[in-house]
Image (tube, helix red, strand yellow):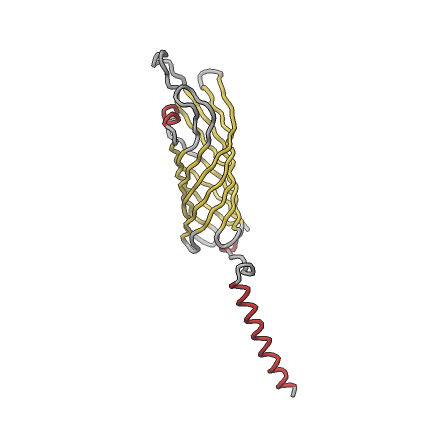
Length: 213
């Protein structure tokens, strides 16, 4: 009798365990988070090339600009990442003379922009190659200095950005990162070249991403 009772009890118990396991892995609310290569949090560092989106900006700051970015993020679920980032950009150029100023009366300029970003990335797959799309908000602190004169202008403005890119896994936690993003930061009134200066534009960034825990 005890042998028969044990067999009768084991069958329903095993069936119930199987059903609970299937439900846990199939129902959206009960599905466990992905292992994310063993790491939920990550840090990333990238550098790249910046192309200003406004003609007036390009006329004044005609030297190449190379932004640097540090990023801290967390994988929220199988598709979504949240991240915070700090991006630093320094551009050099010279004033553009306006009539009736003589063409030789130009002065060297330097612009520094520190942007604090908060955004979301939507991953389009999982595997060694992971493409993504993202967007977010940013708050920029900028300073323009005339290098030959004691003249400086400071400001801060909010803006938006959107990005697309991908990463390639080199191991359990290390990835190569590539992304193209567009940012918009309206810095306020400009000179006679433009009524409003947009400090944003296109950036092509390359870097590395590393899972931390």
